[in-house]
Image 1: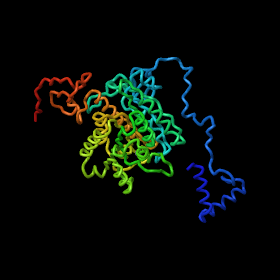
Image 2: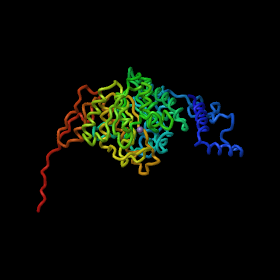
Image 3: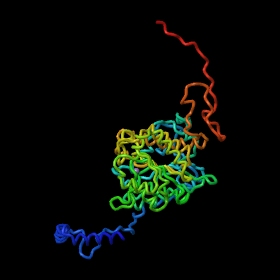
Image 4: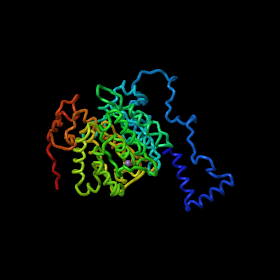
Length: 455
Ligand SMILES: [Mn+2]
């Protein structure tokens, strides 16, 4: 039913009910004063003026015809070889930028990190500032020059992968419904780029509220095919409501939409971290009947995190060929992420979430990632942005490990997890393209006599 028709019907229904009588009288008295919002014969809606010049301005690309001509490729916008964490132009991880799909292709970009500042459906407004908070969330300086390997595995993803900041998706900040189509197109354009035969750019989307999951996943099914992309969904909430206050798309409905539109079969959803008071019993039954695989915090309480983590990895490898990770930061406990729209106590610790995200990106075929619901306005200590940054770093590290064939079950560097010598060669089955950072055995130090203190 058309929106205005529905509203007309609603007004007609109200006019015939006795409960609405007082409202009707109020309307008449307002009309006498010339203030009535609806008069006889008028449509009870304020039409959207689609002829207005600003209607599509949020989705209108800048005119670049007067820009200096340049060859396609990524652009390093930093002035100096290195800098402090807070210095320079705040791109994601201080990476170079790419403005167009041609830039991604020319530089053979493997991972394009992009912002998407949807904010109409968050439980608490502020997620629009997520991408900018993320770009400013670095802790370490030395970008571009200093080697900063992830200590658990001794791999530095910024050195192993070609990555770029792809800017922000176009958003109509006053309409989630209008934004999702533009976001889907934006993500699809990046993911469609083949940087090598059969190898597509992996989009990493920094939100923004969780309504993003619908256009982000839909964009990947546009590239890889309907039903070919599974979703590992980290969240305190199941986000599979049919409606939210009459809206079909908001941050609590994307899972339902993806299943309803047959883009992702229910069995290809693997949910981690559900807790609190949503979904209810009826919704759990709906999830079961649609085959969703869910791992609640109640299950973690019952079986322990390690057992649940292993099941998630197994299930991720037992699904469609391509995987997308949707990481709602509210899956982490509010102690670690207070800055989010709908916090829920009793969540995962970073020490639980980090290895799972890293392992999923190393041990399965992840082709897209989103981090959503980061709300810096509710994050006075910056701890939320810091943990959000690390979640994405865990994924990037996992991707780099996969590239280096350090993708055996739960690989950790012998150099940093054992202090005995010599260091074992990393457990790799296939030859790596380059020497792994821990491949060379380290000579034991010359033994020196231990001095015993004199009593
Ligand atoms: Mn969510």
